[in-house]
Image (cartoon, rainbow, N blue to C red; front, side, top):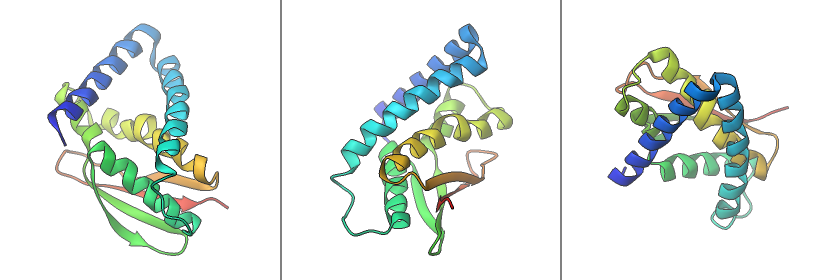
Length: 156
């Protein structure tokens, strides 16, 4: 990941901390969710031209997740794939790294990072392609050396 991207994530982390201090956690995260919905629309507009035609919905979800995370600077690979889901290993997470860079090293808070920041942004993008596509965290890293497992699947 480039230094500039890392600095951008650091600024975002610091900004989120300041907003939480001013507004409180719930209102701040509510505002962040509104922003992720808009971000999902914008990212989807960009990705629609890059996603190959003729993919199944789960293949589309796989492609969107992979592109989203790699574009963000993450290192991801497929851990497990079947006809209903794809589970990814996230080896390097730039979002996790940014929060560590600004001094947030509480494992509990960092585990909530995925549910509050990364996954809602991916989810908002996925739903632009198929509202049944879902993403979930299966395993959250405890440290920078650990991995995360995240699964893209079709809801019933």
